[in-house]
Structures are given as structure tokens and as C-alpha cells.
Image (cartoon, rainbow, N blue to C red; front, side):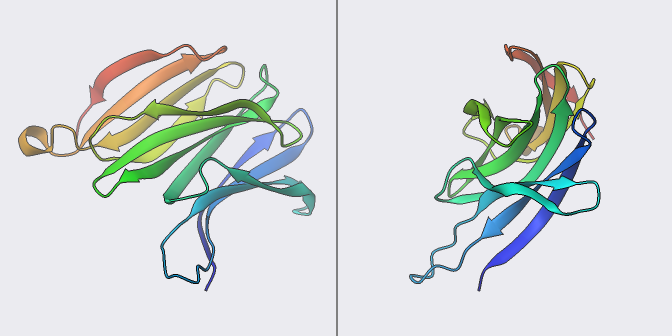
Length: 166
């Protein structure tokens, strides 16, 4: 059975449209569990605009997408977690154009050998994005921590260590 879930949506004020992103898990004849992130532009009435986009890797497990719109980039940043190995999720991103094409290829935000999950992001609306996610890299001593990174066009990394911890 094909499953879809983990929906997220952002608004593009320039074109008065939305972009939705979600986890898509197609049925596999061999029983393998795979999922990927799909995205779709929508008009303000909810009608589909253009075709469905497949974002990121096509094998393995990808989930928990989030997205924001950046006016100066004329596009949406989509972020998600990707199951890199049996015990390690990493955080990835892609920049999609106003019209659904890829402006920058998929890249890792955090790809350490720890379990990094549940990404979230916020934008200043112009050219800056703050990403945060859960990380278990210090789990034995501090439990689950929150890590973050701030990026601005042209997306040069400005890595921040633990920015807060609950």
C-alpha cells in the first residue's frame, strides 16, 4: 500500500502560491521500506500548479519535511531527515525555484554519525534561514539536544553548536 504523511506547507507571496511537501512511501513488491519527499505547488484555492516534484534521494527512508519561502532566492528551502544507516538519520536540504525546478542540488546540513531528526526552520523572508533539529550525538551524557545552523544566500555554513537543550 502506498502511504503519504508528514505534510508541511509554505507561502510564496510573489506568485500568491503555496508549496506543500510530504513523505511519500510507495508500495514495493519486495517489501522494502522506502520513502522520499515529494512537493507540489498549489494556488490559493488549493488547485495543483505544475507537476509533483520528487525531492532528494529515491532510496532509503526520508521523512519529516519542513519548508519556507525565500524572496531573494525566488524559491523554497525544503529540509528533511534521511535515514543514512540503520542507526543514523542525517538532515538534508534543497532549494526549489518558484516554478518547481531545483535551484541548488540536495546537500547535507548535518551528516554526523549520530541520530539527527525532526528538522524545523524559519526564515527572515529574504535570504536567511535558521535550521534546528534534534540530535543524539551526546545522548549518554545529555540526552537529546537541539542543534542549529544559520545560512544566508549563497548558503555558506555558519555552524552553531548546541544552541539550547531541554
